[in-house]
Amino acid sequence: MKNKRRTHFAALIAAVAAVILAFSGIGFASTTPDSKNHSKRLYLNQGVESPFIKVVEAVRDSVVYISGVYEVEMRMPRYYGKKKYKGPGAGSGFIFKRQGRKIYIITNNHVIEKARTIEVTLPDKTKYRAEVAGGDSKSDLAVISIETDHKVKIATLGNSEKVRVGSWAIAIGNPLPGILSRKDRRHLINFNDRSVTIGVVSAKGRSCLNFGPNAETPVFQDYIQTDAAINMGNSGGPLFDIHGQVIGVNSAMQSRSPFGVNSGIGFAIPINLTKKIANDLIEHGRVIRAYLGFVPQEVDEDLADALNLKSIKGVLVARVTDDTPAGKAGLKKGDIITEFDGKKVTGLNKFRMMVADARIGKKVKLVVLRKGKEKTLLAELKEYPEKELVTPTSVPVSAHWLGIKVKKKGNEGLVVVGIEQYSPAEKSRLRKGDVILEVNDEPVKDWEDYKEISKKMKDEKLITFYIKRGMKNMYVAVRNY
Image (cartoon, rainbow, N blue to C red; front, side, top):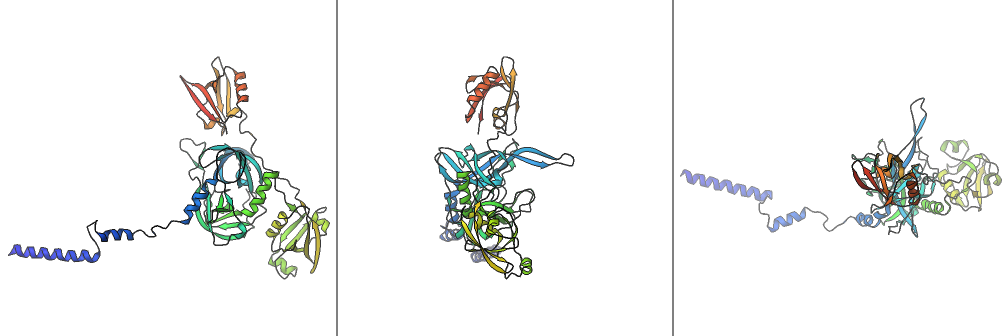
């Protein structure tokens, strides 16, 4: 009897458990049709792909990594003044033009202006020594070039005037490159090669930005604001739209971090402004701009009230320089310029852009308010007298061939007595104390041999040294770029 009761009780427990499992949707069979449908329901948006993937795959290879050796001036403690030192630096750029073997790359002026040498790394990891076509601090734009026969991806330039607030924005670059290798702390290692961040165009026409006391703030500002993350190292890289066209050059960010980490606001130079400047730098080595020759001032609410103006639109003339287009046209201190060449003047920054973009030699009408009365003046535009050209390359980092200091060592050859910092030799396996026996299979017996070989091979990209190190003989390659 007891056994029957236990059997019935066990059967009851089993039935209750089965009901609970059925209602809770728990099952043990993994091959039933229901379990298959359940597993399918776990994956949402099957067959749907992000539209950014196609854009990135199409444009990413136009972005390059720019690195180099920079000469930086540091303010030392009291009584020591300032001290210059050399160190590594990096940024981004993008290929926008090809002429024969020459490849032109757009970047920021602040990426290259203090560089002693500039090196460009393409997406396939090949490296090239770059030359500077020109740099413009007033817009913070620069163009550099390399020479190669290799096929490269050229970015398509868009139209920043058509960009609307709320449009997708895709930033590609090399953020936070200053991570140092544990094995060799002399070189920048780029672990964030051509990283992608996504956001929207937050605003247009941003100006009056101040980049701080240690940086030269650009005069011409008409920035695109974006929340696509732009960090230190992204400078000079492209900002793309959803169609894969470049709409801006990533240049600045708002950051409260000493490590240059973005706090959610980035700024890019519009590509329409960039096009003219880049072409001028390639063709002339400088930017050709028109000027009037007076000191302009923004009109704020207080000035508008004091001058009995109906609005804060227009530009106030703070000072006029004699023998300039403005002076010859009769512009006077205190005038309010309301129109330039038939266009309404809404503010100082837009006015600067209007003048700079106008044709040299053109006679333009200026509508001004002088003591409450409207006057029309005629000014003939001239070229801005300051001719800027950034040429940081061509200055050798090392006074010695490939950065190798040598001296005679008996009848063995020449011994390496020093290797200069950030030189091609420092990046090789060559070491102090090595005895150079041959260079590219040519024997080195004395200083004269070495001098002749160095002259003959100064343009060689890869030089092979046959050396003696201790009791061993070995080959060492030095890449000269």
